[in-house]
Amino acid sequence: MADLVHKLISKLPHQDNELMPGVRWGNCCQLFTPAFWKIEYEVNWTRFQHTRLGDNILEEIVACLLGGYGIPAEMGLLAFERLKQEGLIVQGVTLKKLRDSLYKPFKTSNGRQAVYRFHNQKSKYIFELLNRKDLNRIPLKNDLELREWLLSVNGIGYKTASWITRNWLGSDNVAILDIHIIRAGQLAGIFDMKADISTNYCQLEQQFLQFCYGIEVKPSLFDAFIWDYMKKNNRFALKVLNS
Amino acid sequence: MSGSSGGGYDPVPSDDCTKLATQASIISPDPEVLKKISKGDTLILKLKPTRGPIEAFFNKEILGSVLAKASLVECMNAGHQFEGKVIEKHGGKVVILITPI
Image 1 (cartoon, rainbow over the protein chains, first blue to last red):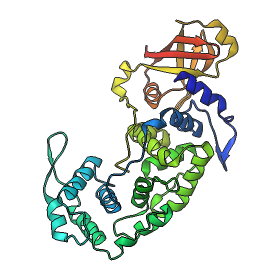
Image 2 (cartoon, helix red, strand yellow; image 1 turned 135 degrees about the vertical axis):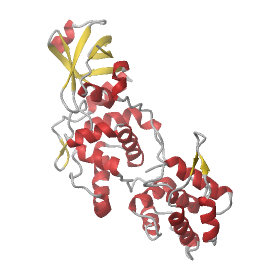
Image 3 (cartoon, chains in turn blue, cyan; image 1 turned 30 degrees about the vertical axis):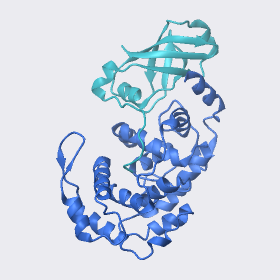
Image 4 (cartoon, one colour; image 1 turned 45 degrees about the vertical axis):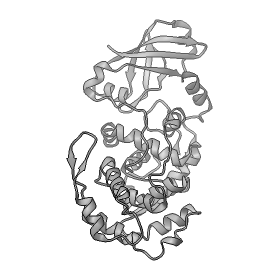
């Protein structure tokens, strides 16, 4: 490990070198600089991979629709597994069947019973998706075309569309930007402190991808890596951001 | 982004700072100070607030910076003190074991 780190550091550009307009490499020993992320990524990237959640694209969309903001990952996956086991992720499924299935309590890994929040809203989204007439024309060969199609699905915004595209095609042309990635980008100096994914997703995504190319990391692994690191150090990252 | 694959970081809450022990490399060690240290020597670690770097000193001389984890920086920001024991020295490569004082 120490040998790898020394080798990597010896190849880093000088900390004052500009990585992209207005962004310097920085000191690799200072948290959250581009140089810091480069070293951390190179040492740890093998622990990360993108994986499909579903066996087909409809399952993948449903799995990601069931997750997302306000829903713990475990609950999203439990809900997905139930719909799958009950044979409800099929074209033409009824709204009632979806709603009834998601309404029933779930047993979590710690043995507790939990309800799936937003079961009404998510059932409606899934019902609308599975009753579309163009499901046999989903563009599955091109990542950006797939994402564009996904954005036409009610309940799916850029982040979820990018997540599905990433999972299904392993795309390096999209980024899954959420608050953790935005904070990391702000600390590294690649995003403005007022960066907002709800109004400016595509521009921020381009900046993030440019950053990835600049430090020569694979975007499809790098955002997952940063997300994990920032989530686990969320309190401290916030403190630094506010200092 | 729930559903992302997990990694191997173990965040250390502030109340566990007294138990934090980790290995780290010294980055770009000063050649003159490097000559003076040996395996087993103890280095004093100081943090440049808020996010580092952490600098390693031997007899009040700076040896170099430490490539450290967020948990260590967070603990030092909270006022915990750490020292580094040289466990490997090979050419310009120095590895230290960091423990609380």
